[in-house]
Length: 266
Ligand code: SF4
Ligand code: ZN
Image 1 (cartoon, rainbow, N blue to C red):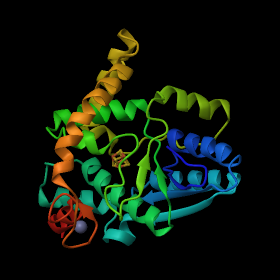
Image 2: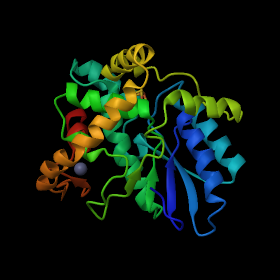
Image 3: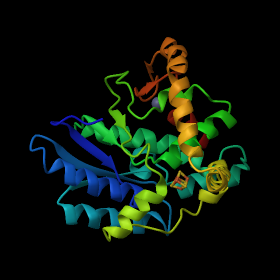
Image 4: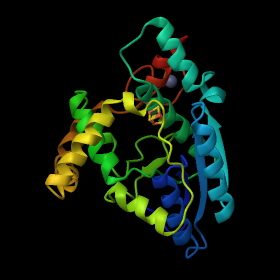
């Protein structure tokens, strides 16, 4: 996933997974003088939640002597996530959840920030739990081709896309939490106020129940998808990436998902 001389940007939300990843990568990076590390936090603008996470992310960066870059939805898109949710309520929209907006807007924000600092890699702390949830989520949304694009090490399919790596993709969430507790790393434990609205939450609960009864089932889902992925990639490759007509960012459509969402909100 990482080369000895990579400049790696770590997406740090302030939660246990991302701060554990930051600490582990900082430890590894010390042994590689040509490598460098920095942290990126996206401030979505979620009152009473993101402020504390930002502070924790920043404290961890200071402790490790790592540069911390903060970017925000408001600065990039003109709206905080809270304002987006408010607008959706006023418009009587009930289709997409806050997480659907948040995920799309954050993905673009992270890529832009990583590209702006000249990073070779963008490391995210997606765990085995996140990966298996995403697989099932994409299937339940009828968006199976997305599974091909969201692999643990993405292809550099476009010069504007920073290669994404997921070093924790085979690490269960419980282990990242254990690491943080054992190392006494400070992390945010308050859940996002919008989290319970997401279908992902139902899938998480289902997978956890199944894992209790059938140990190893999350690995089985992940490994099964790794085997199917090459076939899905063949279909996705044919689609190719273009540049968004409005913002110039890479997309498979004429207008990228972010611009489509912002248009609807405006
Ligand atoms: Fe964004 Fe949803 Fe995560 Fe909250 S739970 S930070 S709204 S993706
Ligand atoms: Zn766009």
